[in-house]
Image (cartoon, rainbow over the protein chains, first blue to last red):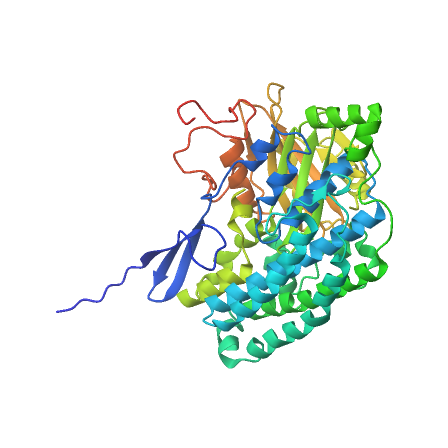
Length: 392
Length: 157
């Protein structure tokens, strides 16, 4: 006599699954193929970055922020530099602000492309990742040309950027933006109306608008749930108010609408990049503030004052006033913020990072309960997580 | 980054005994309230139609060792209606590092409070599932505390 089993089954998804950029374990409770409950287990990549910040000067910490997110490293630079500049009350030159926007938006496309490729792969479509990587390679070449780094660029500095745009860079970016929108159309031809794709994505992993607010969801997740939140529009930073672009918002809150949001965002980013190139102002790429920003190398060779500033900055760093600030940017995953407390010493007293993927992942259980196990993979990859950023 | 002077005024008017300390730096303002009043202040901030702080960006702890009260718990708020930001803080001593959980007001606080508990060692009363989130369950100590060595305890390094 065979007896049927009635208790639920505990299943470990991960540690490490292709839909997670990094190491994540999800403990899933299954009733047949249906997900009853799940608990994500994080921390495999925890490196104590916030603690580390307390032992480094403000300048020294910039390369560490890159290592938090290998998909869009510049956004961590961006939010961190904005927070320090706010703390110092430092004005960033117009040209540097525009360059930051340009690099930022290139990073956004770069991140969304890789997300698109892996997400499609998770849903069983092999082709898109090859196309997505092809375009991603082009952006990596551009970034490499600009600052030498491909994934972790460390291009931003407190007060501006590390170097001016190299010769021929603007033309190369123009070449990219001239053909990229057509490529986005190609992806859409492959996927958007594809019945198999829609079957896997439409109505799956629904997060309502109220739930999105309550769970603190931001970025494409919030915008896929009908919440028009975008720091670039709501609290513009770094000259974003100069550019004309739209925030794509979809109401359904499912995997499909998060996909649509990101596709449209890639187009909007191209639009912003074109505008940056059209109106790129002349001027310095780094603020003129000898006590905060290292003077140009040539001057340290001829002026004693510049040399003194150079040494003090690299030996001791600078001492910001006592105070605390919170600054955030719209990263490809949402509101990426840095909360900084200064006690007047050359090292941050406390640095807290608000990683958007960490908060977005929190809604995973809400979105998945009652769905099939196969849907879990689709939902998980639609969140677009980067574990290095979540674990810090 | 827009700040919220209106929130400070409203809180002072509504809870004159709770709002003891108000701070302001680079256009960002915050209020320190005693932990006994934390929940009702949070509820007011979320529900008042003018303020509407329905979105909690993060919760974190700050260690002011060896000063007492040693810990500060910070709540960074955002309004999806007015798009303004506001910071709320409360202080607790090292002997009694416990604050009420705000998960009932903002469900997103769940993981943030777990993280603060994990790394800073602050207890959140009423939290549905308070356990370590980033470190292994058997980890000793709370690394973000100022008296925790940077390279970890000797047994590890």
